[in-house]
Length: 268
Image 1 (cartoon, rainbow, N blue to C red):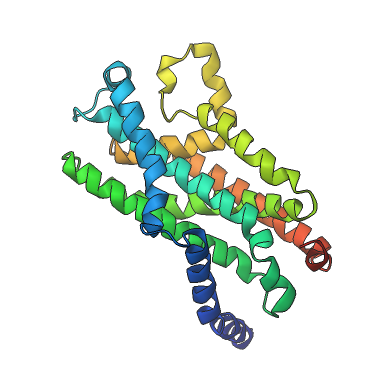
Image 2 (image 1 turned 90 degrees about the horizontal axis):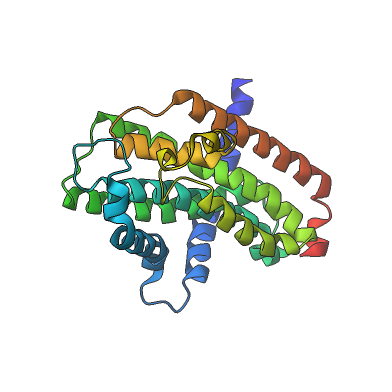
């Protein structure tokens, strides 16, 4: 059994250069002829943070639980935007991976299971760039990390996995029904405003608080806000629940792929 596991590991390891090249080519294609390249991935979330901070900072600061920093709302907003951007970027990479790599799928013989790894790598690089930029901003504001920040890497991976698991299922469906690619951005716009990123849950009437129990993305943003702003531990049960949902969508994606794998090339 051990020998078989090592053989499988060596088989996957033999494709490491292919995966690295595919991730690099994916990033190059996204930022082709761009002088700033990956920096454009940081512009939108940071611009949104700046706009909402300038407009809502004084109003929202009083609505947040007491903290030790005068920059509570910008940090709250950036923490939520970090979680949201990781989720939405990962979902988008999964949604587009099959169509974008259509020529590769049709012409090159390689394990198709590498496609999620390529999407994960691409989304993670963008996410790490954003996390690094926000960390610089936090330090500039005098908000230093604590031991609770050790939760961030685990939440980072969980968020990317969660978004990617949903995106892969939608991406497989998108090969056959291209309307999905048009519908997802609209749905994400609604989901963004149904997630406490710009506002805080205590601002809303108590009767609406229960709706956030049905939004796993809200639990993710709350986990990042708890760790980064309030410097506490996230709700472990919520993270386990999100991991369970990600595992479910991963299984559904794998099952759907096994059913349609022979038809993919014909529809790409």
